[in-house]
Structures are given as C-alpha cells and as structure tokens.
Length: 219
Image: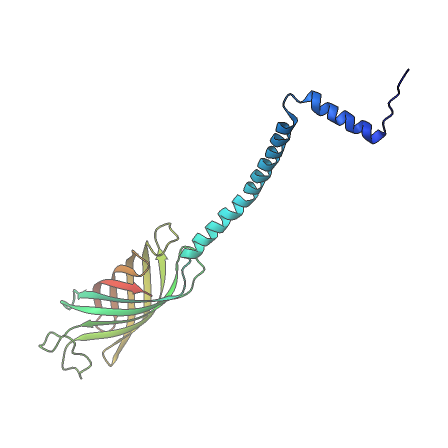
C-alpha cells in the first residue's frame, strides 16, 4: 500500500521554514530569537542616541551662551582721584547705563553720568562747592558716551578684563563748560563687582588731569 501525503502550498512553506530553523541554526531557536531581538533593540537605541546627541549638544551650547549673553544694565561706581597739577586728592562717583548688545563677547556702548570733586585748599570744608567762589575747590559733572571692549577671549563678562573710552561734555563749577575724556581699564571679577583704573581729563581754560582708581557695582 502506498500512502500519498498531499500538502497545500502554504503548509509546504511552513514546513520548509520550520525545517530550516531546526537544522540550520546551531543554537536553540528561542536563544536565537532573543539575540535577534536584542540586536534590533541595540541598533534602534544607537540610532536614537546618534540623532539626539547633536541636538542635545547644540541645546547645551545655546543655553550656555544665553547664560552669559550681556543685557542692558546699570552700574554705579565710586573712586579716589588725585590731581598732579593741582596737588590735591579727591573723590568721584558715576552712574553708567550699559546699552543692550548682540555681541557675544559683551562689547558695546554705554552712557556715563559722572561727578568729581577736588576739595579746597584755603581752609574751607572738604565738601565745599558752588559757594560763590569762596572755596577754591574744583567740582565738575560729566555726561559722556563711550564704548567698552572686553580683552580676554572669553564670552563671560562676569569675569573679564576690559578697556573703556568715554568722551563728552563737562561742567566745572557754575560757569565753565568744557570737554571730558575718560579712558580706563577695568576688571569685572564677579557678576556684580569690579575694579577700574584710569584717568579723567577735563579740557577747559585751565585743564585738569586726574588719576583715578575705583570700585563698581553692577545691577
């Protein structure tokens, strides 16, 4: 007796597939399936990491730059001044408005309102001023525009050296108007505090030149 086994096309394909799995894999089928799944998951994870890393790095860089991006702010400063040609020492004070800037290094323009006072030497009080000429003090106010340039290659104005040049008008006493020039070097050593070293030139009939060292606070 001859028995003939007839299989459909789909059944035949399934038999061939299972035959291949049983006799062509050296390792158990379940283990092979696990390895295949793990490989696919690993490839997917690697692809996601590679796609995400540049975006994350760029986001981190943008956040760092934004943290140090300078903005419009005010600064106040006080200092001691010394005049060589008039042989006396005095004080100064200023209010600065540092204008907004898109420069990543923090360089930009500023407006300065400043006052200086050299006390009298004829026996009047230290703060004698504008008293009809009875005291030979030299008091002046300045309104200047300037530019600040950070020196170090470091986009962090919270910790950097800078050079600043200011130029504007000056009023000495009640009846003398001239030109004020104020170049200086500074060091911003924290978010709020800084030191400055410069000179103040007052160009009037009798020019006045003073050296100045100061301390500033930034809001």
